Length: 100
Image 1: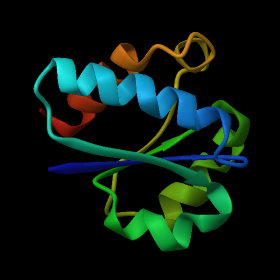
Image 2 (image 1 turned 90 degrees about the vertical axis):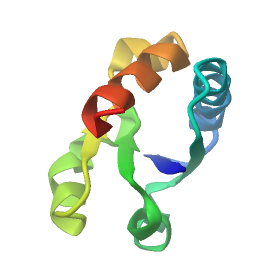
Image 3 (image 1 turned 90 degrees about the horizontal axis):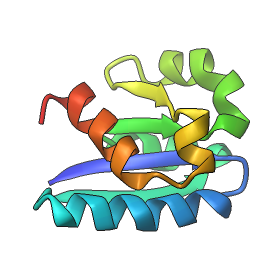
Image 4 (image 1 turned 180 degrees about the horizontal axis):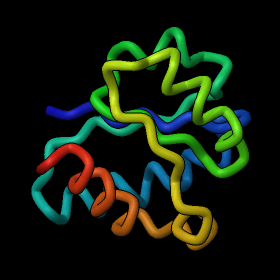
């Protein structure tokens, strides 16, 4: 099972995207654990992640987060996919990055 962790400003709006991503992953038969947390909790939840995704509102922290987790893929969620809550496109990007 792969662990996908999304970080955003407060963990609220991103939880909506998490639900869409879970549905898309389930439809494809992918075993992904997906959760959203505030970026302030990166040191708690980042180490267990296979991939870290940043919401557009915290994408300015991409460089810092990559430095904090140099052994993990850290990506910004596409702003349009985030705004449209397009969980399937975000899952497609995760699959591409993870080689699934």
